[in-house]
Image 1: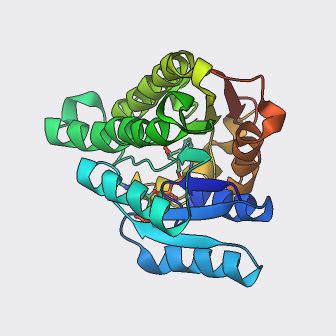
Image 2 (image 1 turned 30 degrees about the vertical axis):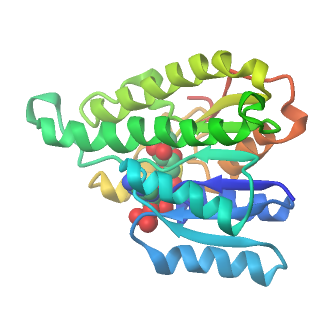
Image 3 (image 1 turned 30 degrees about the horizontal axis):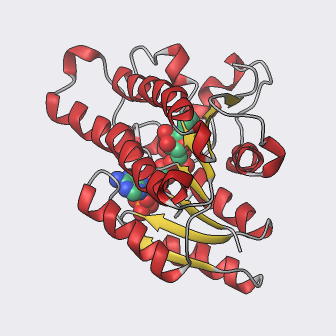
Length: 247
Ligand code: NAP
């Protein structure tokens, strides 16, 4: 059975990806940071439909917790086939003048260091150089990497720019070792993340600026992720799918 680990899978895009992955026949490691009840619900839904899943707590910005996340995935489900580097955070909308170094460090630790060290642990397990049988890594970036998010979150947007560069570089580094590395750049997707930025109604406010004139759903992002994970995407590496309604 193929094993998929999805970081930040207790809600939003991660939870939708977990449910779709289970439908596609993966055993799913459902990582969460603080919301054990929401992660348990995702696992329960998968099991109720006859699938295999385990909830595993870890703050992906902390290296020792990432080590535990991967060893628990090994122990509970087996050797990893796919990593979805999905967990990410943003903080309240503000201009650069008001951003503290502490805030920048929190954003970069979760959105950059977290994805790097999760990918590192995945490569150790997937790479044919390390005795693995290959795999796929999908990094969740954002259209913000291209727009820069002025007046809202330059820090978040820049962290996603780093992820795009990381995706290109890592894809080349491990291409001959059976691992494909790709990115998905969502646009405005209806999830709780906008409330964390201080504006729960953000997608509604901005939808007229989207060529398709609506926000996207987490399930629509999950479809792109699962395609990149699958053998159907076997000739795609170091590339991106924008799920952004044309933005
Ligand atoms: P969300 O609804 O806020 O969910 C975030 C998830 O990440 C939760 O499961 C949360 O776990 C987990 N998480 C947060 N910090 C974590 C950490 N340090 N360690 C482990 N897990 C952590 O977010 P979302 O909208 O689904 O976003 C998912 C990804 O898509 C992010 O990378 C985000 O940047 C990207 N994205 C989203 C949008 C959008 O419009 N929604 C657009 C572009 C890109 P707990 O619930 O346990 O705290």
